[in-house]
Image (cartoon, rainbow, N blue to C red):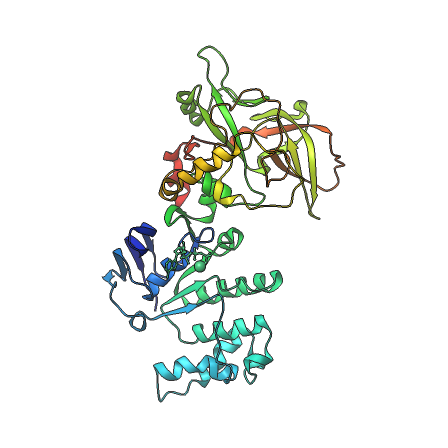
Amino acid sequence: MTRAITLHNVSKSYIRGARVVERLSLDIRPGEFLVLLGPSGCGKSTVLRMIAGLEEVTEGEVRLDGEYANDLPPSGRDMAMVFQNFALYPSMTSRDNIGFPLRIETPGEDPRPRVDATARMLGIQDLLDRFPNQLSGGERQRVAMGRAIARHPSAFLMDEPLSNLDAKLRNHLRAEISKLTRESGATTVYVTHDQAEAMSLGDRVAVLRGGVLQQLGTPRTVYGLPANVFVAAFIGTPRINLLRGLVRAPLDGAMSISLGKQYLRLPEPLSLDHQLLRVQQGREVIVGLRSEAIRLAKPSAARPGEVAISGLVEHVEFQGHEVLVHFNTGSRPAVVPELEAPRPTRPARRRRREGTVLDRLRERAGALRAGPVVVLEHPGDAGSDHSDPAPPDGRLPGDLVVRTTPDIELRHGMQVPLLVDIAHLFVFDQHGERICPAPARLPDLEE
Ligand SMILES: Nc1ncnc2c1ncn2[C@@H]1O[C@H](COP(=O)(O)OP(=O)(O)OP(=O)(O)O)[C@@H](O)[C@H]1O
Ligand SMILES: [Mg+2]
């Protein structure tokens, strides 16, 4: 059995007035694997717990197969929940741990055939007679997963079930979860803050920020047509390059986006999306360039649609199969406040107005929750020439990260020609909303 889970304008406040989930609407189809993705504290677990019936819905409706279910107790929902920290009964063997819910649900029925079948699926047949303290963390996790699966629930609700495991086991179990949930046909809602996990598992991904849905779409859509800067920056590694730019659209000349000391000239004839950018003439925008949109090559090697810029090598990150090169192009990065994790860096000069900007951002925290993504660090001077290319505190040097093959010899301080594929250019407005490609194109990729 499988079921449709619908959230209709669901809000949640723990403390009166402070909403941690804000008018969330989601239509989760029967059998679908939906991932709730977002940074820590954005409300993912709260949403999952409301679906499970473990948390009261403050406003709005939860419907199961179209039926109003706000007041349905967890036991009446036929859902199995899997948590980050699986709790197994220490005094029971794996067999009894898996069989326990079955014995409660269907007393009188021998749970063994179902326990054995589940163990075979999970490859834990040899562990059935062991106690939890005789199992490794990953094995325990599988037993706990078995306990959820053996019941054949109509929906699985999984809250970061893999986050305590090492990378290898995580990958392995990720594939297993995907296979098992698809085979069982149960609807799955899976919570994670790991975008790679979300992209690899989900039929669709719902990106949350401050309790507000930012975008709901297939992994391909949220990566290829992010609705705003937050989604663009949250999804994809290395992080999308976000640069502050200024649109220049003279009536009698070529259109370009100025990036501090350099500019991107939009190739003619202008695409429809680029023509639509004309109205932004003279305005500050945020340019988004994924690392695959840029390559190391001379201007003479440019293909149609590629434009030349150059960058000074600041830092080379060897990754084995590839190399990430951090360039300084003389432009200023735009910042998505919640996503700026402190990273080990060389000391950077403090900026004159930093305190004020942070203060301003804090002041706007309320608006940020629900509203647009404000990312400009120094509104007012984008596109101008500036002599201070120092990165903001807490960031790696450089403003542009490009992927390349490990065989290219690059040294700090080298000036390198780059080609930017304008077909892969994203432009966001000052509020962080995507304006190029134009938002109207979104439904194309959706289904
Ligand atoms: N019982 C509670 N009482 C008050 N506030 C709560 C309660 N539970 C959660 N919150 C708050 O609600 C917000 C969302 O919490 P939630 O646990 O849903 O986030 P999350 O996205 O699951 O985060 P994480 O990735 O860290 O698990 C947080 O700001 C949290 O502090
Ligand atoms: Mg959580």
